[in-house]
Image 1 (cartoon, one colour):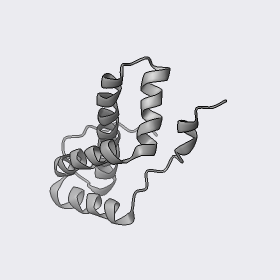
Image 2 (image 1 turned 90 degrees about the horizontal axis):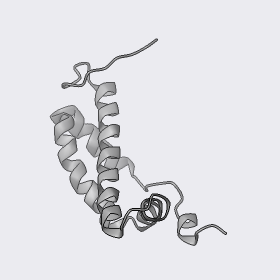
Image 3 (image 1 turned 60 degrees about the horizontal axis):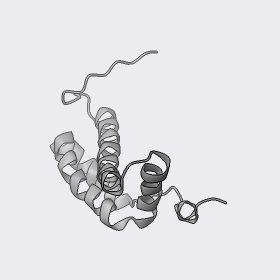
Image 4 (image 1 turned 120 degrees about the vertical axis):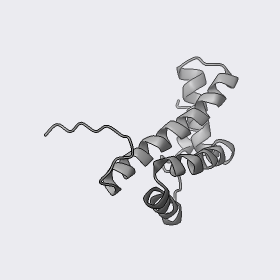
Length: 108
């Protein structure tokens, strides 16, 4: 039988158009480092309040990967930050002709 806590998570983070719009505006006006700054607060919000996603990540880090609860807690926050940075980088490349220090290599 599957772990009941994992079944709760729908795979959706519950993002809103408004949230995306704020990040898009910030990337456009302030660049990716400004968006990274805001991302830290968003990551903390997810870390404290997104129970379903936290349960799934906690289960993965503790039960599947064998980390301690304290290490899993730190890894959850890092997961939110690194995932957000990857999204910001992709959007930055798509929106800006100058890449703000990102090196891009495209095949094909």
